[in-house]
Image (cartoon, rainbow, N blue to C red; front, side, top):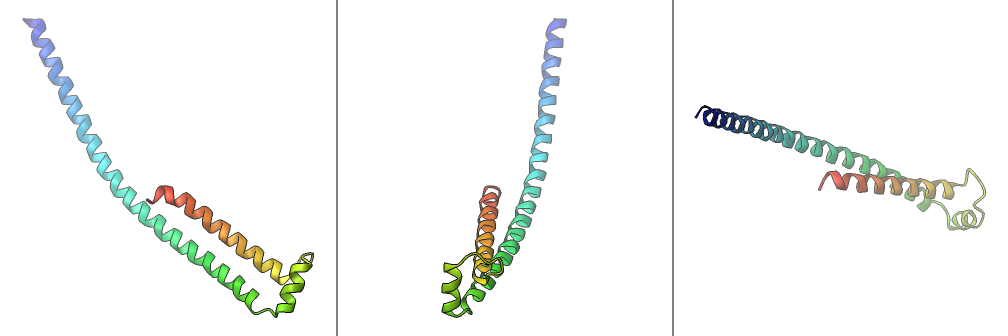
Length: 113
């Protein structure tokens, strides 16, 4: 009889401990969800700001290319040797901005569904 009482007491104690752990887990999950929503919002805003800056870079490079006379563009394309070549520098800036923006979007898409 004494063993049975100890077994029942032990079982009740285990159930109580399990209930405490489940309540704590639930509370922590709620806190985690709040933090996750906040961080996702922060990430969305940061990505939007970054992509806006990269878009400005692409637009500036495109504008630079668009204001050049066709002869300059043709000569630059046929002789891509000069480090100061305006077309080359502008196209490289566009490619870098495009690649960077794509990399950011790929990484953020996993975190922000």
